[in-house]
Length: 375
Image (cartoon, rainbow, N blue to C red; front, side, top):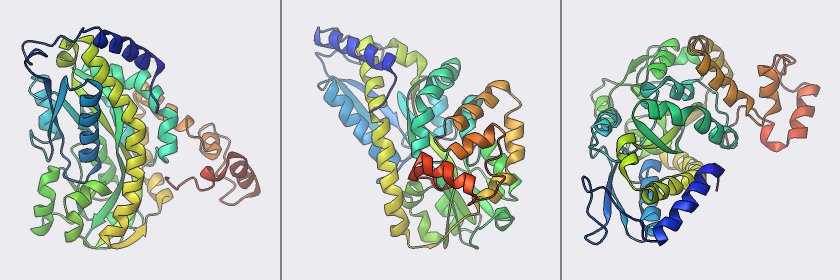
């Protein structure tokens, strides 16, 4: 299990307070412990079997266990309290207590848009290398400035393309397709650069939109697609790994700060402890779902797509802090070939399979031999 030392130390101190009986609650939003548990309402868009769903259930179970029944997480899956955009607004009115939000966080603050940069995150090992630093140095502060408290960085996973027209091999084969994309500024720009006609409709409306012929397909994580049965109205699955989407566990800052220190400590500690659990669960689920879908499956030319995406990087990097975020993630990659490329040493210039590249990859171990293979 990972997490910052500072958070864990604070959590340990707070748990001492719990044992000493310092478990008061806000009278405006919850009953006293003697009258019943503190209830916090957790909304998300996932259906049964999705990573959203199982992660939220596990979080609720762990929070209740750690608090010895004093905190109860009431789950509202399947957009029970609204879609992501609506939930973000409700949070600022203290109408929703907790949620896990992916792409729409890029509309909250520009720092979250770094996860809209295509092929920047290589695999889950890479995530482990930068997660704590990016949270501490950028994302906590960015969320706070907009009225949200960031508890942990889970995942929604790597994103892929499905459609009912043709296999997607390179950027040219996407041209003209009507795809559903989330309501994120950079995601829309990215797919427009590939010639796609993006439709930023709510996820819950995708299945019907494809049935009516208004949409050709979708780009999303495999578990969301499978959980909503969207694969049943699609023919082609392209394993593109074009983006890695974290799932940010958040609360309204005002609501969070109104809670006792002991409650805040438990909510944060469990969220951070689950970061590794979610990564491992997501990896296992991806492999299983590809087999279950049974669609015509191919892998995209990721290098061609990356080159087509350079204008997106250039625009995003115009803001110094956002440029620094790209650099932080890229340089944290355990793959020495990627680090050399960033520093201008031309690791890719000699061509794949060159003696120099092979030697560096061998030194780094099996995980880096294929720099385009998320694992």
